[in-house]
Every structure is written in C-alpha cells, then in structure tokens.
Length: 130
Image (cartoon, rainbow, N blue to C red):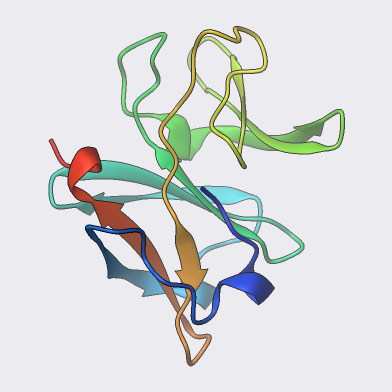
C-alpha cells in the first residue's frame, strides 16, 4: 500500500503494524531512492517530483540483489514506476506489481509524512519482518 503525502497524515497503521521514523522528508531527493533497514527488512523509499511517497521491498526478485532503491523512476501508462538497475524490470510504485511479468510483485509498505510533515514514516507489520 502506498500513499501520497497529502493523504497520509493521521493514517492508521495496519493491524499488527507500527510506524517507524525513517528520515527527514527533505533528506529524500525527488526522483531518487533511499534504502532504510527496519527491523532487518530493507525498504526502498521514494519521493517523486510531485512530493508523493512510496515504499517497496528493496530486494530485486529477478537478480536477488538489494538494489531497488537505486532504480530509475519513471512512468508507464500513467503509473509511477521504478526500473530495477540490474535487469531493468519495471515495477509499479503503487502496487509493487512487475509490469514486465504479471506473476511477480514486490511487497509494498504503508508510508506517510509525520503529523508535523517534516519526517517520513513507514508502517511495518509482522508479515514483513524476516
């Protein structure tokens, strides 16, 4: 599940999840990814030029490398995307679905700006923990 920055303030974490402070909003460069390790889980965090936030698993399912945060952001058919830097498969930032192979998807994480708007928080549930 991904959210835009405007709609996430005050959002409740899913059952069994807790919000984890990841970084300052201004530390995320637009159209660049960053990796956060939360309870041993690598999460790729992205901020678009429009200010929308997305969080996906950082593990590329095709190469087995933790590199999604280093992917190239773009769009395909109006969907915000990230292309893996390894073999260039493209994933929908909103759903985690691979647009090149419908049988593959990256786990997504709830993401929001803090109540003050200056911090980024990711929701992590037990099912995401390793």
